[in-house]
Image (cartoon, rainbow, N blue to C red; front, side, top):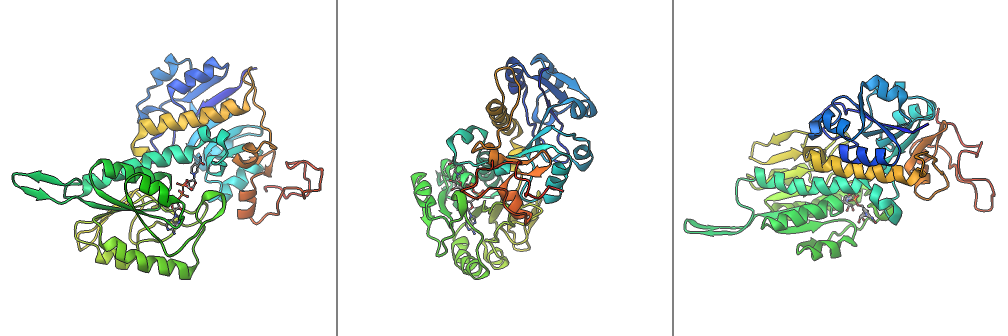
Length: 402
Ligand code: NAD
């Protein structure tokens, strides 16, 4: 029997689609069946007809959810849809495994195998083609510089004209990971004077290689797996005080700082917003329901202060460059599917594999990911080093997801 892969229409303001017609056609070529919920690609400019031309079946949501072996989604599906998932089904997407712990518990209880892109071990080279966080952050960083340039009431580049000379804009990027570096590169190409700041000193070389200045942080906060760690309250205060000085000298501030599974750090305190020049633009890529990097920014809203400073809450910019974002997301999904499928399109997930052991949040009723187990205060499921027992769900001492 062939394996059926379904793609659902996203809910809310999410415009992206997890599988494009191009990737659907490649999956069908690899002997999968593909079902697409009617209208799933519409907001990303992929018509139902394009999916049909690729060989996919366009069906209702209920049919897709009840028949699929694998469901690909961008965001965590709504609770009604989650409730309809059944035992053995594979769900793959940005499932908020570290932040929406109730949904992860529910997926475990329903014995769904949940693969959550937030958990991908990104530094393993085999995982790079699956790295949704990078593909989408790269788009968000690029778009952040464009949004800033659009909203700023002056030129980005220096302009020498018969009517006078315009000074170049000064852009500061706080958090120079994937999104930050892309924002720096884009702002540079638009002609601005750009600087970057991060608590990981290792990012200095990357910032400087783009021709921007690296502002040295007095706080160094290297965490696990190449990420930054959360700052202590004292370190946060020290950082905010030093950033007030840096921010005042700039016209545009693009913030991208995140710590996985935690509230984003507050980098731009109210005092820095109050001291900013009138007309300054802050683009907060961390703005979400969890919080943001800029005091007063609101997710998906632009707040204009009394002094004429624009605070743009831009936590989902990838969704605004929807076609490219969907194409890249879809390639990342395809890379995961290719990794776990054999030549007859049958899927087996090996929980001892170095990528899958981390990417899989839940399987056969258990919480597999050690990062999720830690977030849920569950004991580690890994056996001791001298134990011959397998590192997966055979460990009967591990607590069940419910
Ligand atoms: P992220 O989205 O978790 O955070 C964005 C940036 O914010 C990071 O550079 C982080 O250091 C910074 N940050 C966090 N707290 C901060 C604070 N208080 N003040 C200032 N900056 C702060 O990061 P990311 O873009 O996903 O990248 C995380 C790391 O993973 C980087 O080292 C990146 O190079 C690495 N990475 C490696 C690979 C790979 O090896 N293939 C792929 C992607 C990312």
